[in-house]
Length: 227
Image 1 (cartoon, rainbow, N blue to C red):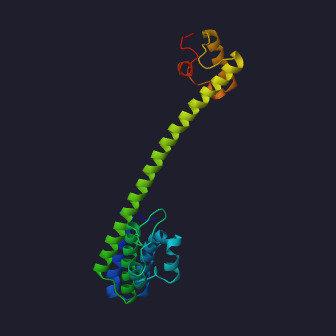
Image 2 (spheres, rainbow, N blue to C red):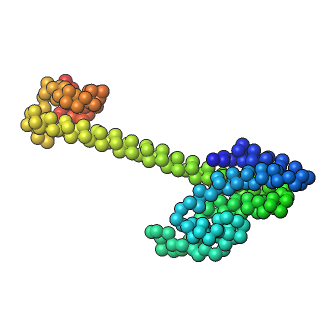
């Protein structure tokens, strides 16, 4: 996968070097080298169009050349996304950036096939691919940030569930061992024994400090007096 800056700059440098040679020597080797670099850029962009949304475009070749990309911009009607009531443009902003990059690459490829590659075509490839890569990097960063937010929220939910589960187990032991009922106090010695039973029955609570379990006792209503 090509990343902006180093990898793209390396590819553009290769295009410029081979274009300079091709201008003076029409050897097929240099033409093939340029086309290989352009193909590398194309392959990096093309996954944007892998979804079923682009089945028709793939089937009729509208992702394969400049003419097809022009059709992609002009001939596909707006769509109404699921859950929406109003139509939106067929291409979203990211897909449009990818299509613009492909158009520049295909235009450069056509020039190469004709035996030349202009600096203006190379610059368009550079600018449009860089714009696409920058947008892709922003989207991925946002996705990672969203995953991190979800991970934090889920961890907080799991921690809350763990505390609730621990308190439910304390209630179960208190009811079974001491016939405890909500609002009924348990003497300090019995609370100490309850802590011991909790930790021996559920080893995962061995690391839970007395202070935390005492807080559970308080919230449950087992009396807060320290033993």
